[in-house]
Length: 232
Image (cartoon, rainbow, N blue to C red):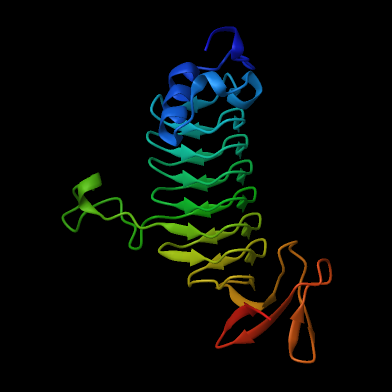
């Protein structure tokens, strides 16, 4: 990449190889990319596996860890002391805030917000040992993941208990424990989390007007049918 690549951190390790891999994966020619488009920031104290793929413009902050084979899209932000597990996938423009734990095999769509201290679990029946008290290994249990749709947001200190799906543009209130699927545009809160309303793409709560749900910010309208929201 030569002088076309802007090194933004003394702690940036293995970036040229990682960016060539990214470019080849998505079919770009490295020569066509600008230094700004290729730039990836990794804080000196962050721990990013050599085979993790970080999209152009992604930033990984202090003490964060990105494990092997994780794939982060473009312009993602991984906050201080956050954890991204092995093979986890993040779409473009995701934000994972400080101290959040995203365990494999979680999959996040585009523009997903993970609030501070959020945990996405991966073990339905957690145990450190087998019935004979021998320590469990990776072969002794099956990891299950949390799947989050585009534009959804998980509020601070919430826990999503896998396996579970959070629908597109849904909003999980801070401190909730999600144990069942959340529909697209669903607003859930509590322990365990229950749906208490609907939200629009801006995150504002929808207003019901003559049987139609309306976003107060965009004017977008929806109809509720069979527990799901559909464009009017």
